[in-house]
Length: 458
Length: 77
Image (cartoon, rainbow over all chains, first blue to last red; front, side):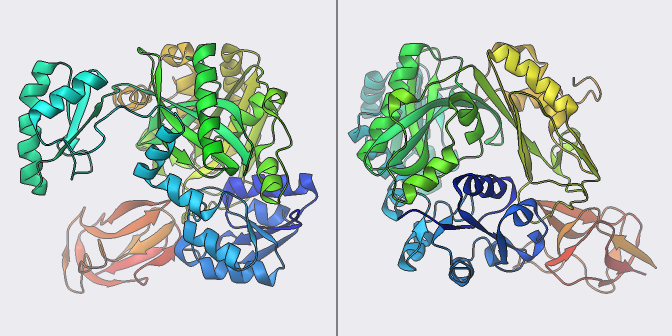
């Protein structure tokens, strides 16, 4: 049964994106909002809007009862969760389905399984997807640690089996180092956790973050190629690209095929992303986790392939088969997205939710601006700081960076701070221009003061 | 008497966490730089500090109340 009345249980730029997808499909859109969000852009654009509670997210966007009541009261037949909030909550999915509504996403069981690190790793291994090589369980002795390390290859990371939060983690580059470090790690684990059990895995020291976009209809699954999201600050992606320029064609094919194998193995429905670490020196990739929802950076894939990911996920969750086969999905050129946040990049990224006094949007062929701003809009302080994304597409990566600089220069958001100066400084950096970075690159670059010289950024 | 204003919009808290006592109570001495409360803004907590010395009189808004930039959050004498 195709979806006819779609309830959007999210806010901000992704709510706008979902409203637009619904409009393109001729689906009636019903936008949920908190009391603090009654004048946000998605509310203005949707066919109707309904309040689901006070400003704090736990009383509105995380309030399952309030969302279901509003969805029923407005006659919705499906709920799109966006990203964040309840998008990966099995309890929410079960409640939605128990109310007789369609959840636009995978089944609660799939979300639960892929949300559990151990279960997801087992599912990946069963589907033949490479995972970070490591001991299958606890390692009790130094001799056992050495024997496992010799099998999986150096450098290795040793950590307390009972630990967490990075305590007791040591990296050994050789057998000799491991023999001297393992007893220390064991003693420290015993002291800290009362448990000397260790875990050994391959250390990937400066990995790139690469992920594969997949789509499934519960039976068939396809990939829409990969993205590289290595530029991160505090584990938050700030700049994303499609495709990953560091991959050769053979590695790209193997990577994307592995993602499809896992998606098929779990009968995936909707849009999902498999995240990998890529060890560039060894040309090896390792699955780390799966996100069972649409992602912030999905537009770079849409620009690269021309596939409307949000529309496709709505269609397949309404019961349709995938509208395309793998050989119909092709990649053209290169796409880059940067995240604009209401933060002051010169003041250690302090949140700065101002009132938008004027707005000049970037335009032109191959330029897209996903956002939820309008002139006069007071950015509410109650939610995360993402204001929107500038996305560009061009024939080559170099041309895409040039186009990004033009778009960011054309963009003017007066009345609030944004992270646009960070992106202009990154675009001007020779390492970024060369694609020479990894997940541990951006924070030292910021600490070295590459952004403190105001006015030099561009 | 002087007022302490919120530097940012957000949610104002009297305490560092629900288990802790309020940062200041009536009659407490306040020195420049003393923490008066916290503002939660976009999932980040920022300290609100005193810019002038004085004696704490009262909080001008409830704990966990939404405030806008420039709102008076506490009064000193």
